[in-house]
Amino acid sequence: MAKGGFPGFGGNINNLMKQAQKMQKEMAKLQEELEERTVEASAGGGAVTVIATGKKEIKEINIKPEVVDPDDVEMLQDLVLAAVNEALRKAEEMISTEMSKITGGLGGIPGLF
Image (cartoon, rainbow, N blue to C red):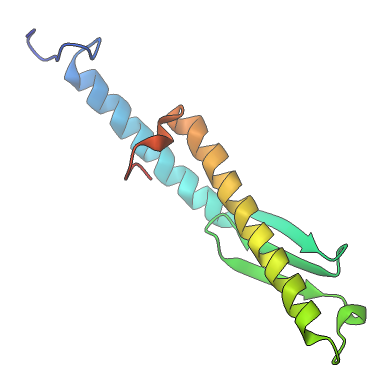
């Protein structure tokens, strides 16, 4: 084995460690940025709108007054649930897309992020 390297790594271990540290810094910065970014989803043709952050936290839920029917609370519950789930799905998609830009598709490694 060559000094400072491992077969199959195509370079020395120091370069690999520097790349990993750079990636870690970029990921930390991105996670901070994602906390500020938002996604929006709606259900019922815009009757219920949900805004979520890249941290997958719900920031806002808007319900049009005309969709509030005391005799059909279940429909409103279903609309809210659908909009929340869609907002969280969009947030996850945004996170995955941005992380893959940094990791170059290494997201399949357990515990990477």
